[in-house]
Image (cartoon, rainbow, N blue to C red; front, side):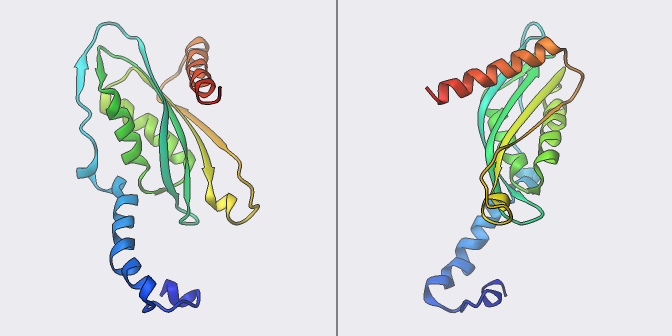
Length: 177
């Protein structure tokens, strides 16, 4: 129906495999966040203290629920240990899993903060997403800008927030020498 609506022939040889094989596989991957069995196991390990763990530069790809177009960018995540830590790759996998659904950036940011708090029993979680939206770049204003959203699962002292921002800036400085 989509191809016909834009004036294409769904039986055209170059498109047949797209709709029979490739599109279903693509949509399965892009909607992985709806499948609980795809959620990474968030196994934690004992640790001493209540220090902050900061993971910067996590690639994020998601789909805008209003336009069905991608938005993409970077997640930065920090959590205060509550006597345990999670494997660092699990933070990446959790962000990737959670982002693979129809959503909006603001909700995704909040869901990451709340979800990670629950999953790893953290004292607090800070999340920052910096995203470019193709619904803005390819249509509408046709301008590529970056949108930043932040969420925390608990109140955070200003000096802790500043250390998080400093870690993000260090990551960005490393990316742009």
